[in-house]
Length: 262
Image (cartoon, rainbow, N blue to C red):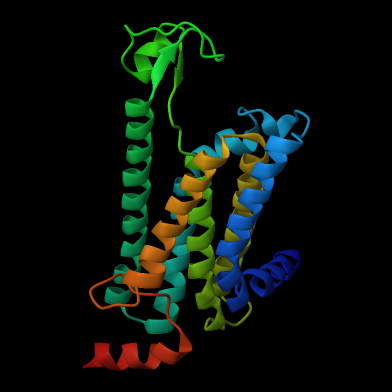
């Protein structure tokens, strides 16, 4: 337990800072552009991480929102109930995960449709031998063909969105002060460690995507969709009424409690 406490202390000190929330979007854009330039001008040698079948990609990145959802669900519930004591407010805040799920679903559907309508089936990855008889990606792959369209980077979108959402939700830790030995303290500590490590996995795999996969334009659009999903919710909608709301902060916590008492 002592090692878990130390790890949680380090992660809280790193990810909960306001500076991290302020500069992380810019850091993601900069690393995406730098990695893409490196990929074009001086490609890195093939490695385990450049293989799409690597463990992190198959078991984490491809289901990134599921991991993020499953860990944020108890974290938001525990921390928000601890601070407000109001089940209604907790449910309201948990609805942000449903909003995130809708954003993930809509964006991936858009990406899939764009790839479909801009793509064609070829005999090889070198784009030789156009096969006009195969009008969609699934049929093309089933017949051994290669589908080529504008493939917006779903990894860039999802990893950007997930990392920013986690960092936004972890800001509530500024207000959470529990006593050691309590079951609640243990649960929150374990969730902080899990979410912290998950965030670093997302950032690391985002960088791997930048230096190994996709064209620059595909990664730019993917990252922009992730930034828009984050800013459209936490920066624009959530501060307003009739929204899931932002994580409780010291400046607004007492006001929220008073409004619910009324």
